[in-house]
Each structure stands twice: as structure tokens, then as C-alpha cells.
Amino acid sequence: MTIPAPSKLAYVPFVSVDNMMKLVHHIGVEQVLADLARYIQDDFARWELFDKTPRVASHSTEGVIELMPTSDGQVYGFKYVNGHPANMKKGLQTVTAFGLLADVASGYPVMLSEMTILTALRTAATSAMVAKHLAPKGAKTLAMIGNGAQSEFQALAMKTVCGIENLRLYDIDPAATAKCKANLADSGLNIAACNSPEAAIEGAQITTTCTADKQYATILTDNMVGAGVHINAIGGDCPGKTELHRDILLRSDIFVEFPEQTRIEGEIQQLDADHPVTEIWQVINGIAKGRTSDAQITLFDGVGFAIEDFSALRYVHDQLQDGNFYQDLDMVADPDDPRDLFGMLQRAKR
Ligand SMILES: NC(=O)c1ccc[n+]([C@@H]2O[C@H](COP(=O)([O-])OP(=O)(O)OC[C@H]3O[C@@H](n4cnc5c(N)ncnc54)[C@H](O)[C@@H]3O)[C@@H](O)[C@H]2O)c1
Image (cartoon, rainbow, N blue to C red):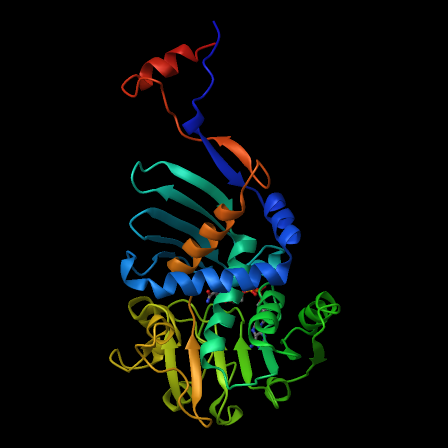
């Protein structure tokens, strides 16, 4: 007996790690970061259309596994992502991810994708898109504290979206700094490896903290932060996992993605539940003010929100043409007679 071939709708385009890397090189890393910043900003501009919920987190002593869903009413997306700070010492990634887009009208998946690389790209694009709105005008120097997996992406996005020219690196592990510096040797950035966080933030208009620890850490203390800078704090993204001393928060104007999630996961978990924060989509849409003075400290308390992943998946989906950069996965059981699922199973018996 011949087994019927799966219907066309059974096949879902799958973007593997290999194809994601080919796609990024085909377009160019910096171009992808700039494109993603635009896609994310466009989706933040239509914020009110989206379903929004804090991500669903499953915590363990080693880390966290999270699901991040959202929908704009036409398309649904979700990401699976983990955060395991101790992984790196075991030779594993701290963060791995994959995600899916689906058609809201039918509920059928339309794309499955790796998202470990895509998360690093979208996190960097988000940081830079936000910094474009908040950082001091003409900012040229970025301090990057934490030189792990995310760091090069962060630096390149700040270069291409915000015009950063100088990069000052610090990590408690000098091997991480050496890796980051070597990876960015051809980037056109002037790079300085620093031996303390104080040295790294010297003269920087933007400081990114991107470290991984499963507990409250103090990467920046109050006396280290001068007036008129922008802080992009993205490494603290779980209950009990923060990077900044509370006093810095009290001196800063704080900008967030989705307050309901950030109050659980972000730096502001250290503050009262009603401490004022500004939602970045409101700055993008001109409803709220961003930077209002040269002396102001602006702080992006970035934890990563589902809409950023939705935008990133939407971007990748828009690049898939002519069978390039994906494989078809036989993923949806789709019998010709929708009520004959069992018959389809039976006909497949060998
Ligand atoms: N906000 C977001 O959207 C988002 C997205 C992805 C990852 N993250 C978070 O970003 C963090 C970094 O992720 P990664 O994949 O680069 O992790 P990683 O493990 O590859 O790198 C972390 C680096 O931080 C360094 N570090 C740890 N403590 C430090 C300290 N006190 N001072 C200076 N450096 C220190 C480590 O040596 C390591 O090189 C993680 O906490 C992750 O959860 C946030």
C-alpha cells in the first residue's frame, strides 16, 4: 500500500541554527540588527493591539525556563527560552531558545525557528532602539560590563543604530574580554579592555550591564554613575537576579518594556511596587517624554518581552523566499478529510 504524502499544510518552514547563520551572513549582521531594531520599534508603536502577559516562568535552583507568548490578532508567536547562569562553566549556553509563529485564523503554525542566535540579535536590537531614544545626543562611547555570549551583538547594535565608535570592555573573567575583543577586531570599533568596572565606564555615555548570576549582584554602585548617562541594564531578568545598586535606581528615570513583567523580574523589583516608570512604547509614540535634560540619568531596565521575539520571528519569516534558509518540517497532521485523523494513521501502517 502506498502511504499518502502529507498535505501541503502539514509542512512548516523550520529555520535551523545552520540556516539562521546563513541568513544572517547573507544579509549582514549589522544590517540584521538595524532591521530588527526597526521591526521591534514598529511593533512597539502598535503596542495596544497585542495580547500582553508576563512570561510564564518555571524556576529551579539552577535557572529558569520560560514561555513568552503574544499575538497581534492576526499572528500568534511564542518563544521557549532558558536562563542558566551556571551552564557556561559546564560548557553550555546560559541562554538557549526556539520559537514559533502561527496563523491566528486557522491556528496552524507558519514557522518554527531556532532562537538562541535570534534572541541575542533581538536583545541587542532592542537595547539599541531604546538607547536611540534615551541616550545623550552624540554618544560615542559604550561601556560593556559582562563580555559573554550577548556582548558582541550588543556592541554591534549600539554601533550601527546609535553611532557608537568606542567600546570599553570589562568582565570578571579576562578570557571573556579577550574573546569579545578578538571577535570585534574587524568591527571598526576602537576597543579598550579594562581591568575594573570603574575603568570601563570612565568617559562612557552609555553603559550596558550584561552579566549572568542567579542572585542579587552589584555590578554598578551609586558612586560609579555620573550625571547625564544612559544605562542599559539587561542581565538582571529574574526574581532575585539584579545588577544595579538600589541607589542608582532612585537617581534615575526608569524606562521599561511591560511594567507588569519588569516589576517581577527587573532591577525595579528592588523598589516599591508603585515606583514611577515610563513604558518605552509611550516614548516611541510621543505619549511620554524620553530624555529631558543633559544631566538626567536614563535607565532602561530591560528584561526581554514577548513582542520583541514576535518582531524577530516576523522579520525572519519575511526573509524566507524561494525555499532559501529553511527546511520543510512534516509537523502538522492534516488528513484530506479533517474528521479522518484515525484513518490517516491506519493508512500509514506498514
Ligand atoms: N534582557 C534580555 O532581554 C536578555 C536577553 C538575553 C539574555 N539576558 C541575560 O543577559 C545575561 C548575559 O547573558 P549571556 O548569554 O551573555 O551570558 P554568559 O554567561 O555568556 O555571559 C555572562 C558574562 O558575565 C560575566 N560576569 C558575571 N559576573 C560578573 C561581574 N560581577 N562583573 C563583570 N562580569 C561578570 C561572566 O564572566 C560572563 O562572561 C544573562 O543574565 C541573561 O539571562 C537578558
